Image (cartoon, rainbow, N blue to C red; front, side, top):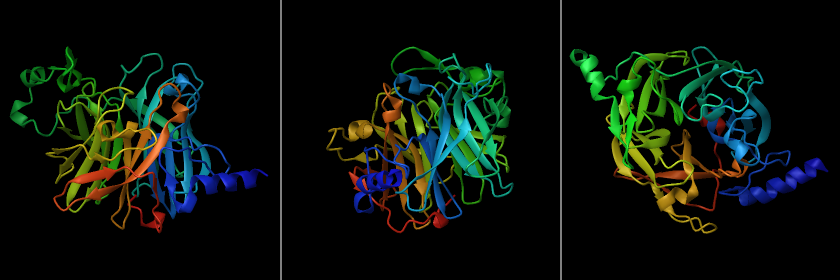
Length: 375
């Protein structure tokens, strides 16, 4: 009976071989897919969807389980692989039950064979003041992932755009604080030079040369940092740059197409949706140029349009070897996070090297192969 229920659920959820955006997605056991703010890793013929495991009510804004993973061969039918990183019961642990664990991203390091997970971490009971990066490692894609450490990146390291002759205390003081658009001041990178840079909404991008970069909202969410990782993906080389400076962008997601890197993100309005924004650059280290809002169209069920990104926020961009790219979003529900619905939409790359993402009720990537995935 259970298998019959799962089959019926699958047929309803993915009618005509398509997924339905903003609907509940079910796994092969008939349970709702519970993976938010994450991404998709491709490995040995399968897609691996992973993200934050949420619970009912506003308590889902804190981590009480960990990172959940599912696998698929077609991006439509998902098998539950369980919790691959679990929060800990130990008081004082960085990933203690009740911490904030968001935006997990997993990459495979070909050099070491390890799978490395980065995530935004806030220590239990400290709200969003810790602003740390968490790192976990596994021998298998499905884990278990062993928590390694948390930190604020690049302590004592200068951004590459500051000339050597200007790397002094006077320069640091020029970058201690900045005006918030809505009033008041916020500390920026100079104030965090010695202790390490704030790290919140994030992604990890593996480039065509296998070099990996950690990209995250920093400086009280005012500016994005692009940070080069070591060859084992477990640490920082100290080479980093500031992009979209004082543009107040979070939720970064990156892809590469036709000689350009593209980044999509959102403004900083907490759990309230806002207009997406996009950027492009010839080098991942910049300079990056702002392009505007890539979202187009209206979700007819909710009547939410491009001015609030259909009620969603960007998580990740899944690149496929055939040139297609999917932008992954969550429709956040802060009062009941387990009901945050998934939206996956294709990115349209224009001849003028701009991008757009148009709402579609349903979409299918027939013929998509995990063996052809970029990572």
